[in-house]
Length: 415
Image 1 (tube, helix red, strand yellow):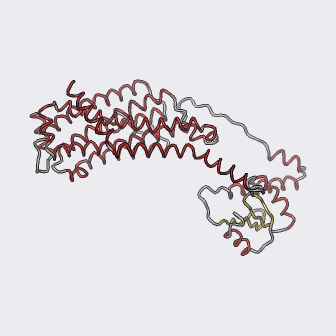
Image 2: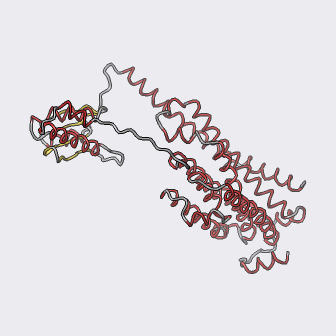
Image 3: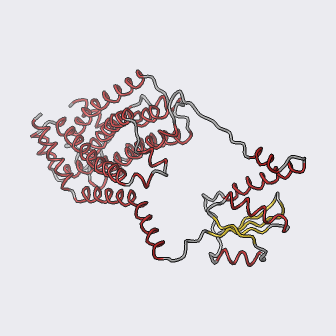
């Protein structure tokens, strides 16, 4: 235990004195600060701009060209109601003149109606979030239906009441609200993905560096391999947790300072309203999942004959993790997180940290399934940790030759 404590302390000092580690942490905290304060900053700029300008800010111009003058005023009123953020203007300009106004940014867009059932929409750059055509379709359809009712003898007031009937609804979920929990799950999976790839590679590199400098030979004679391997991995886990706490803690702090500015964004608000129970599961699966891959990266790092071979050596583990990540992300995107593949992955140690947490967040899982998954994952962490320590000890002897799986297994079996 004393050896483990010394190794843990030494490795933690390495991380906290590492300029890259500290620099990345500070950069992420500053980036979070900029993002969280952005609405406040934008609001202050707008307020300053309005204060220095004597004329009120103008709304974007939307041009409307109807087929007949009789339709113009009715169309303008309907479009102005449907597009309150625009200054809807009727025009009789030629098409080329309208296009020129749009390209010169004198107008944002234009609707040229060839009748009540056909139109052409003109805009300079068609944004992927542009929903003006859908809104225009709804407006014109409503006008046509209202006109048909009036022609059939229904008064305009009655037609308006018929067309303005509101449907109320409510949804009662007997299980989990997938929309509400989607962002929690996505953030956890993505954070685990980044941390494992970053710190796993760092662990493998550190071990390979010790081996190439012959420092490993001295360490292995003064400390037990299990103490060394667990000390290195737990130190990297603690360093990663400190970094994540700094980043997410600052995000929570800055969000609290700017909560009013984010009230209109339901996605951001839901991210910072994670249930405590789900947060507990996230921490459990996050830590155990990290340990599984960290031990594997450490073991593989000890078998590398040269520091330059690290990227090639860890490729199988990296690919295994990426495959697990893709399976979960595809299931998450499809909305079917209880498919057969996800159920199987929920009990495989290399995938359960992501698969089971996703199912817990997005579906209804029996308590015993969760317990079994956590028990398998925790047992695998211990088993893989001990096995990695043995590989670590054997790796000291593998200098100058490319290790083969068979020779490693035989050496571990004899160790």
